[in-house]
Amino acid sequence: MVRRWLRRFAERAVAIREHFTRWAHALDVSLGPLGPGRGAFADAVEAIGAAARAAVLRFGPGPVWPWAAFVSGGVLLCNTKCPLPPVP
Image (cartoon, rainbow, N blue to C red; front, side, top):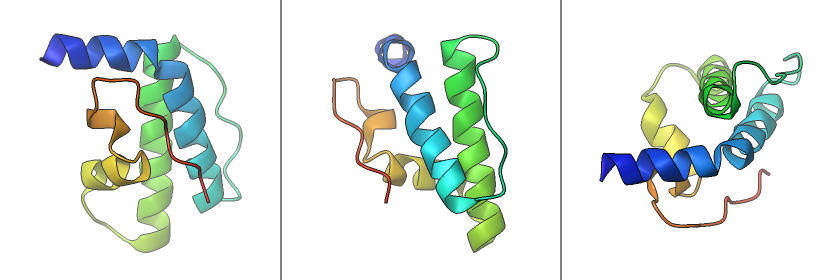
């Protein structure tokens, strides 16, 4: 099960990175660019972290992964080709 999830995450890493980068900038307009770095998988994880940090700075401390699952429409936990929801 975990291997399937990791494989799906790797396949969708670019889309996930783009989605969470948009969230990070929507929550923190002063955030600089998040450029590509160590590979698609690592960049996606970094974008999730940047968006989570922006959410904590804006809304206060709270659990990060439930928030990440919510803004992804559950796609982070999905092992199918679910579409990512739009960023408001």
